[in-house]
Amino acid sequence: MQAQDQTGDSHQDSTAGPARLALWTLAWVATFALATFGPNFLWDSQPVASWAAVAANLAVGIGWIVAHARFLRGIDELQRKIMQDALAVTLGVGYVVGFAYVAADQADLIAFDDAGISSALLAVVYVTAIAVGNLRYR
Figure 1 (cartoon, rainbow, N blue to C red):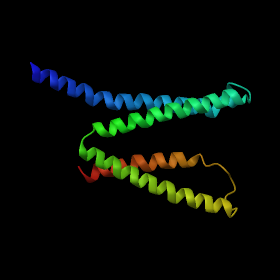
Figure 2: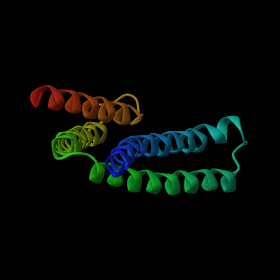
Figure 3: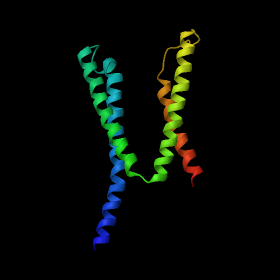
Figure 4: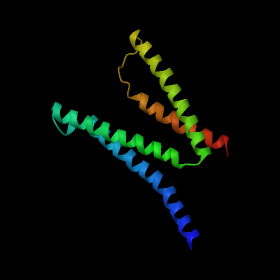
């Protein structure tokens, strides 16, 4: 009887971590959208509302970081290694591409001034690196 309880608790813990991380991720995306689109669509250039939305995004972002760290501590060693390698590649790409973008911008080589694509690039690199890591260690 006790072994069944431990197995059930273990399964519940293994699903609670990813679910908690997903909820924090959704909350962070929602507060980011609010801070980004709120000034144009919900309130009309009110700095107090905009600062409140940015502060909420930062607070939820800190919660997301804590949830992600807990998630990493809760997964097995191989998955942790795969994610650590993916994070290392993503950080490297972020620095290299980010500094190249700054250099190109300072040399007036960039016609548009939108760094928003960098977030999408980092997300694609991270997901790709995790997929490659899973294939490598399969």
